[in-house]
Length: 236
Image 1 (cartoon, helix red, strand yellow):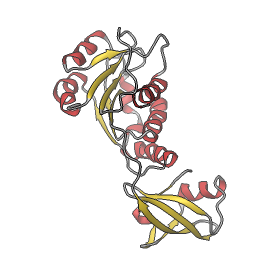
Image 2: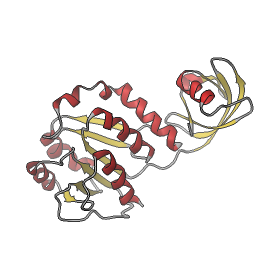
Image 3: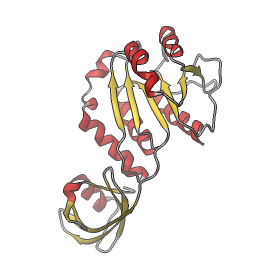
Image 4: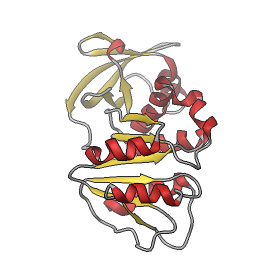
């Protein structure tokens, strides 16, 4: 755990917190904290600073907290992702959260299995759990916003252009003729399809809204690998 992510309910007074639950177990068993140890801490959706362990008990630790600086700046990227299988989605949410993505749209596609939309993982509390793991990894505090859009054509034709306003619009597609640019470092709206890619009519619908297709080379990657690779390529 690279950051102890605090919630308002953890505070026992303005400068002290008491940590229980999963975080306590991790700090004891993995970080092996003892009294007077100093940890990086941050308030959920708030500032970051330090915490000094003032008390260690068998079921909680207490820390004196000083939160004195802002979290890292968000990545200027909006991710539009065809809903992947649930096990893959867990890893993607954690990865893109740790990279600083703050707006994520999960969309439908012809190749997205209907059963994926019934997954318990799509409950807001389950998604938040995986976002929190990403924040703890990257020492960030600001939760991404995740939107679920089950009607592809309606979303692309009625919402996507407004979402992508004033950004570079890209669709990652293995059959594209253009190579994806690199080192853009500007606002981007990136659309990534399901395993096997978008079907032709979906690509045409995206192109009508200004989203032209780009490939990333001769190798066909799994979605979870492609997401991380594309973000790194666009912003490094």
